[in-house]
Image 1 (tube, rainbow, N blue to C red):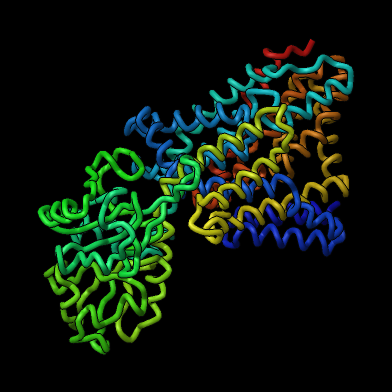
Image 2 (cartoon, helix red, strand yellow):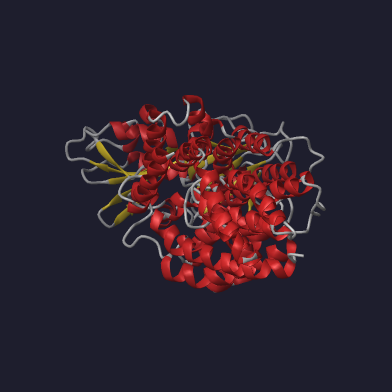
Amino acid sequence: MISTIIILLATAVFFAWGKIRSDIVALCSLIALLLMQTITPAEALSGFSNPVVIMMVGLFVVGGAIFQTGLAKTIGAKLLSLSGDNPTKLYFLVMIGTAGIGAFVSNTGTVALMLPIVVSMAASNGINASRLLMPLAFASSMGGMLTLIGTPPNLVIQEALEKNGYETLSFFSFLPSGLIVVTVGTLLLLPLSKWFLNGPKGQRDKSQDRVKGKSLTQLVSEYGLSNNLFRLRISTTSPILDKTLAEVNLRQKYNINILEVRRKEETQHRFLKTMKQHMAEPNTRLNAFDILYLSGSYEKIHEFASDYLLEILDQHDTEDNKSHSNKLDFYNIGIAEIVIMHTSELINQTVRDAGFRSKFDVNVLGIRRRSEYILKDLGEESIHAGDVLLVQGDWSNIERMKKDEKNWVLIGEPQAQAASVTLDYKAPIAAAIMILMIAMMVFDFIPVAPVTAVIIAAVLMVLLGCFRNVEAAYKTISWESIVLIAAMMPMSLALENTGASALVSATLVESLGAYGPMALMAGIYFTTSLMTMFISNTATAILLAPIAIQSATQIGISPTPFLFAVSIAASMCFASPFSTPPNALVMPAGRYTFMDYIKVGLPLQIIMGIVMVLVLPLLFPFN
């Protein structure tokens, strides 16, 4: 028992110190428990197969898909329209919305769904996401106190009451106390988040550090690609049907540059349709309803359209029948700049002779030579040392160009640029999957366990193309958070196996029994609150519920307020990142340290406890 308590205290100290990664500290703690033979190897590894941990993995993937498809940005924009540019209104909107969802969906699921939305909202509003993410996690736990199914400790105390012959609780028995919890927490977190959650000073987004060079939007603007961008749809009667681009000979005949061919899969259901971008290659054969993205003068474009019976699409009639302005998309095809080296073999060769298309399957869209931009008749233009060429091709082909360091230097990171492209045409699919997942988790008549619902949703997000590839889905998972939670879960088993938890709780409760029911309930509440910082809230509720009933029975009062104290204290644990999965979920995204949770969560946890000890006897009298 003593060794377990020492390991627990040492773990807490290292978490607070913050010099060693939290997942490494948790693993070292797990190894120490194994070496002391406090737990078996099977018990030590049980956290990695725990449904909550598996659910967290799946929810990271679901949340990543919501972000990757732009669904988070869309929802965030609609919510931002309600709050305007007022950060305080945005804060209240996040707190109330999250608590409302948390009343019916697990707090872990609530945070995973809301996290990408809140990050997008924060970015759009120009505020630090860390100001909102910890309140988001706390609000999900507070919302769980509004209904019977909101959080597992609620079900634990209902079972304890039923088992001991007391009146069972209804679905909304928790609503009065839950509303007080949400109100107190929301009002307290407003100043606490302003004072302590401003994000690490001088620290930038790592993803932005990887994407060096100009953004895709900057490149399009700089080279004027969208200034003379036209989209032409091929009709079923067009003479261009079944011809290749080489046969049409656009560049020489019309002085038009073709950027890409957009094609849809017509055999699929409209809702599940896919959009395919094709490189404008000489052997590309044109089909009916293909969309040609062309760059050239207005007169030449109209001449070409008239000669071949093509439909010019204005900015309100795109291939998706959606209303938005002409623009280039980079789902499959990207652009990047390369700088020609002085040692390059391409110097004095023409662009056509250089063989960019044959060797790397890319097109040259423009040349920047000092302050001059060359965009026409590129095939016959000679390449000079120091020229910057704008190339276009599949992202994988652009990435491949990095290997030829003798002839040029590729500016930027194509893989990171590709990852930043929003697959917005997949947003409806992501939304449908998200709604399906929530329905399976909320409605009891659907015989699917929550963890199963999350796994189904995560796999569907990958299979239906809400990620660029499977690797992109894996990258959305915060393995540090997963290892942290999985490695700390066996700590509760160690405390139970050694009898430490039972001894601590029984001693504290028995020592306060003589001071009256209010003092006893306070002892039960804060004992539960303390234990929840180190073991799961469900395990804490299971341990303390029978002690609470026994204590109330011994002094002849109703156990209901005592059990509510156990449930609320077990769920309202904010002073530790590993006390609940939501706290761990937001830790990497908000770049929080252990001390951030202490500074914000500990005052909130203590004040919440004082308020609830005073309020619970009014809601649920002792007699």
